[in-house]
Length: 264
Image 1 (spheres, rainbow, N blue to C red):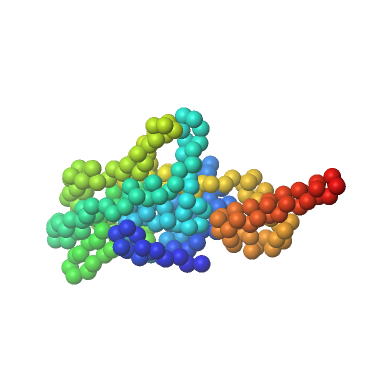
Image 2: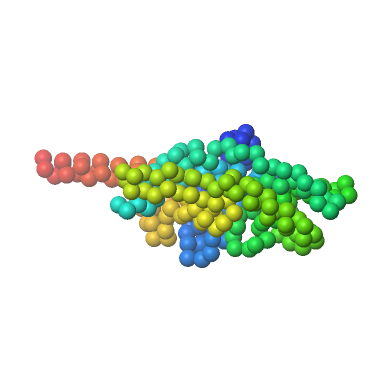
């Protein structure tokens, strides 16, 4: 099912639902690199030309719609649940930092990066939103990986020097205080940098909500009442939780009635 919603900057975004079976795939990436899980999660976003700020807002809403509004964060007192709403409000609408510059005959529009930093220094060139040269305009976020590599390898060195200057002048805009922390619960502040690995790692943790054992256990229990496993795996995690609660309530009620009959 395709979902649509409006981001804080008024841009409409279309995404595919994340289903229960998709969480199984996400759990398999737990012990591997962040690259795999981020590439997998980005495949659910159907709208093109999003920068990483817009993608972060999109993942917040997608997580809320398909998995739930509470996330678990670590504290000195153990894991604590907090509402995504506290995090979403701090992302909100970002300042406009877009800048148009002419470099050696090319007109470049610079903005927030369209790619996450997954370990390759080439991601820095995704700060370029578009390039116009000899009447042709290229949208960087629309390029395939091979096209992206081809384009950046042809850029003059002056572009890289200007990108470094752009980053330095906008350093404060690339830092996000996602969560202010809670002293009473001993939860530290959550800070992210749009230009380093902390952002994709945080997003990966947002969707790492069930391991293989719990995944199979919930299916095993629900299949006793709803034998169509294909139907179950094509539900969202929120729906699976609802079914699980209804089944648990039903069993609890049956057990209570049985105990009542035996005692009478």
